[in-house]
Image (cartoon, rainbow, N blue to C red; front, side, top):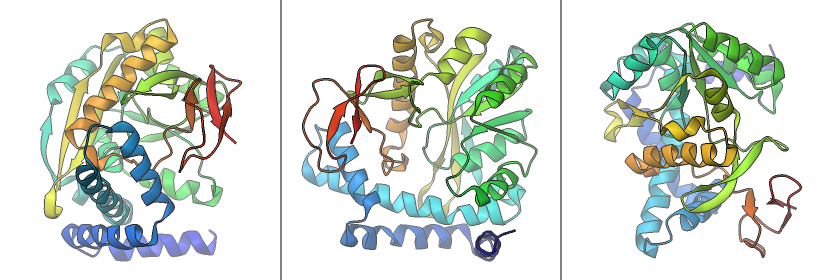
Length: 312
């Protein structure tokens, strides 16, 4: 194991000795330096919130950006509990489960379940909890630093979840798992690669959107739900949320299906807007007609895929 991976494992284990409330407090304190230093994450979050909440006044947007950065820090530090400590102790921080009946009904259907888990709240905690209620398979992208992949797979599979790479062989395996009636977890708001996406609105902004989950829903007839773990104030724990998806998410027309999926994500984000990963460049592709350089995204040119525009 490379030295940097060993060092990270050690840091996670040491951090797991601290109370969750203290970890969250330390993480939230990172918001101030991020704002003062004008970090990339702060600038991207500020721009994304400007794009998605144009009706908010400057003060309200500023508060949302500050809260977003605080939750970004909390999410980073809570990985000590989730990846470095006893995962069942982490499950003890779940205080409430809302919409559990939707998940139970979907699992009882026997046709498999596609769980769309946006980058919202503590998606790593959600993975651990789902591992205890049904056989779970999680689709993931290989980290840019591939030496960290075993750490990621081990942590997410601590309670039995199966990790599958986001590649052709992995997708075929997902279809097989759905036929077996399993639960499949997918992060639906990652930027698609190459021509794997379509333009669809997200908070009123046309952006390239992945189609994999929608295609799987259409071909398999599996139930589709949205889920996330909301972080409670002052390290008090988490509330899990499960919401049914619009049936149009399985539409045969990719654009309509992707739009329905994005609407479902918006519904989740509106429950806990500061806990969404606004630090992610969600709008790296924009529709034709949305021209001109952007203060964060830079210059744009027409995309060869789906009629969009891509960053130069």
